[in-house]
Structures are given as C-alpha cells and as structure tokens.
Image (tube, rainbow, N blue to C red; front, side, top):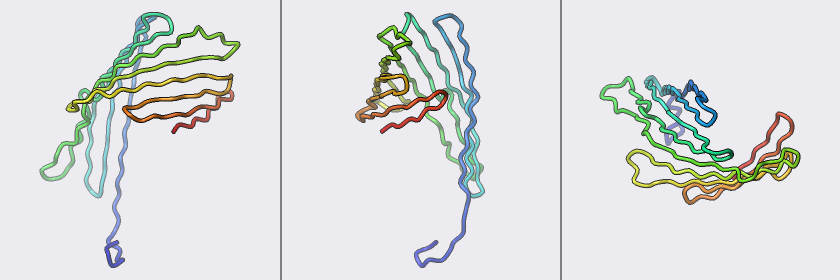
Length: 171
C-alpha cells in the first residue's frame, strides 16, 4: 500500500537452505565431519543460488574433556543473483574453537551432571574475538538448568524431560 492506502501489489520473498552433513569417528578420541551447505533466495522475480562447506574436528584427549574446532563457510556460499550487475552476497568464513568438561564422573542413579563449556569465535574481516561460555546442570532426573554468557549478553534457561519428550526454555 502507498501513503494514500492504494494497493500497489504483492511479491514473494523466499529463503531456503539445504545442508548435507557427514561425520565419522576415526579413533576412540577423534571425530571429523563436514557439511555441504546450499542456499537459495527468491525475491519478486529474481533468485540466487550458492553452495559452501563447514569442516570440523572433535578430540577427547581424556575422558570427560572435549576440544573442538569448526571452520565454517569455507568456502562459503556465494549467492549470485540473476539481475544486471549483480553484487555477490557472500557468507563470511570464520573459525570457532571450543572446550567442554564434565568434572564429575556421573553416577546414573543420581542423575546429577554438570557440563562446563567455553568457546572463542573469530569471523573473517572482524577484528574482535567473541567469547562464549555456559553451564548446564541436571538437578534431578527430569530437570536441567542452564546459564550462559555470549559476548556481553547473559542467558539462562532449562529443560524438562520426560521419556523421549523435552521442553526447553531459554532467555
């Protein structure tokens, strides 16, 4: 509608992505994986299609301690539109390095469990390193509490679990 309330028309704006992932445990403590990512964007009568990859490795040097590295969007989907003089719409590559630790040898009968995580992200063409951290504690069999920090933002949440069902809430 314009400022006078006249209907101008409609158009379609659609974005879709399809990911195909593969992972393999090569050793009792080492896993590798990758994802082929395709992206499609259609707006009005124009469209763009692109593809890219993510690569990852997960290592468990000792029981309950895991280290991971993810290189995402390398090479990234480069969306090229079918318009005159198109500008590329690139997904910028980056790297994420993380660690997780379960300090206690969980006794299944008590359901008590604590998970501590930390991660550093570096996006291509961004000078800053972003830091993330989190805690997850299974208080009782069906209740999990969470707290996190994401580059200056604090979050909290939890889960209620019953058999194969899970209800999550995070803020």
